[in-house]
Amino acid sequence: MECPSQTADFTFTDPVEACLRLLLLSPLGADARNLAFFPEDGDLADYCNGDRMRRVHAALPQGAAALTCTMFFDEINRDEKGFNTGDGAIVVGGFFRARARESTDAKVSFGTFPKLRFPASNRNLDRVKLFLKQLRHSQLNAIYDCFTRFNNRGGAVVQLQTGTPLYLARAVILAIYGDFPAARKITLTGSGCPQCFVPEDLFNVDNGKAAREPRTRRAMKKRKRTLLLLSTTGTTACKENADKRARREGVDLCVENGMLGVDNDKNWIFGAHPELDNVFQNMPQVSLHGMDEGLTSKLNLGCIEAVILELKEAPGKIKWSKAGVCRRIDRQVCAAMYSFDLNSEFKLSH
Ligand SMILES: [Zn+2]
Image (cartoon, rainbow, N blue to C red; front, side, top):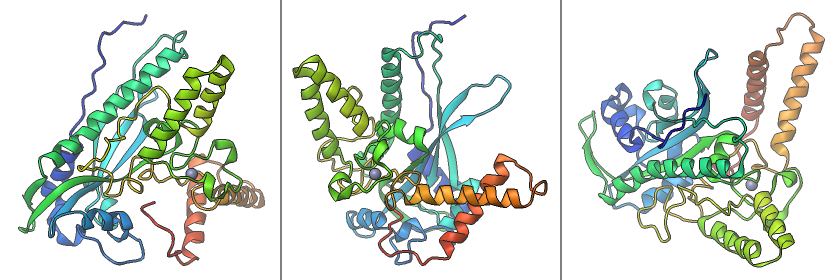
């Protein structure tokens, strides 16, 4: 029996406040060696080495720092015995150095998106899907507003646990991490690449520079306008064609992205450069065609083939557990990574 509900509540902890608490109250924040507020030269081993951090700081008043963070959105399965699954959100202090960020003291789970129950017969209705998308983006917008509020107030002057006073001029989301279904719920880019307009079926071919146009607020709005015009003013065939194109290119014609921000936003949240720092470019994707076209998928396939070979060579000796295989692949990828010098063109912040 489904119980109709009139409202959908979403309660979450203000992620900016959570970050401040991590900085000012957690044991990690008491040790200056764990903290990095300002850009540093280095081989891109940490957030403070990246170009985004440099851009953020170049735009701040002299001496001021940013309260940086990264966010993780993922589905969590709490229990097999009747608990609901839900999408969870975690915020990690970006001012902690990489080593410190591994600690649980560096992160806070600030909310879970409540799962709304619809009867099975309604779950696949277009208007139900549309409602769920709109709901999610009003929730994401509420999260985004916490940052806007802090920045509109002009930030905060705090005293670090080490005794040093620091002016945190603004709160910044350096990156949002999500696997594919979680990422596209945030970028609203459907099956297309969250960072550029390449559709899923072209991920494994060379699309040329023109096809790799990065998604930005302006580029997305422009495509949406064109596709909406095609969709609303032409014939039925024309509309179908435009809708199909919109789905392939990952441009949502119905729902406004809750983290898109506003035009000429002086109180930017994702970074100082609207073309390089936005909800799309701050969403690093490792699983798609991000490096060279097809390179990542080839690496993945190679790893799986190597694992299968290894298992075949030692039958019975290695347990065929999913976790075991994943860990084996992780080790192989790490070994492969460390055997190459980091390409200086490779940006962690991208
Ligand atoms: Zn892409």
